Image (cartoon, rainbow, N blue to C red; front, top):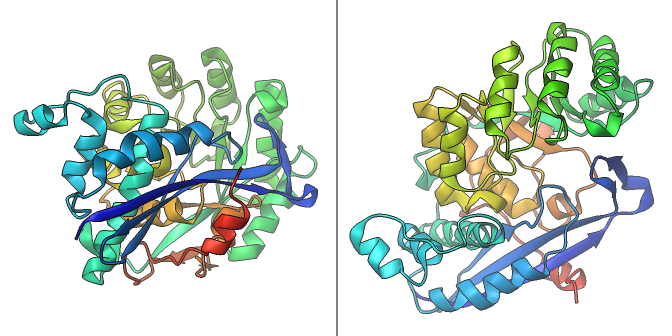
Length: 388
């Protein structure tokens, strides 16, 4: 089996005004992602996803070009099942021969950023092919799912203090979720106002529903510490990205100053970034986005770090169906995996891109027993929304 073709399409799906929300990312009016299609010489097709931003809207032309023009030529004619070696070929090019032979990395500039997202998109597709070639789900190849279902939390929560409780309660009613996540941070203007929204949410939800907060890295260290103190009695599941990912020591200060667990990682690249989070004791929960951090192959290494440092793993799954399915497979097999993110924002890339669905029943998502990633991509949908 050989790789015959690699395509990368920037899929841009407008979100109607009724489905748009406003956060610190501004008004989100589209869902953008690069959908990767890898075809073998015997007709097998694997699907992957790469992202140019952690939110849903982003310009992806450069990312698609990296996949098509830089990485695809390195892999054509290769056996797609040699996933670990091909990851190193992409990461270390043009010194991959030396790196593989000597057993240590020799990357150029592309150790972070769009290059890693591009590698991740192809890597996810290669795992999809491997699973299909063996008629086995990806989670089986990773060691087997630890349970047939996993708990999920509803991710959204942008409403003001008067309406946030009702908004989150509406999420719970949609899927029986036992946990929800809301946004805080610079969008509120101050830590005090963010805390007011959290307290309003907790008052409506009651004490038994899990509640997490996500600041998207917009607080300063002082603001994050103040916010954590203000909500310390609200029994939060976690406080996500309290400060910029570039200030990992500052994040460690926030964690040390409060009993509220800290979650981070959706903006990080490779195991090396996550190793720093662990070594600095900056986070309790690691949240790699597989369409950003380097795909399934790198997520396995990040999972090992979480386990070694007795941390937990909750992949960032605000994405399209390929990255969601990939993150689900990793979380389901990781000794540190414990919960799944489920977007309650308008997400056509999760719900309309594929023939299947990932329904939530009583707050749980089934780990599907279908070959590969377990998804059937609607290629007409990709063509219809392909950005010119």
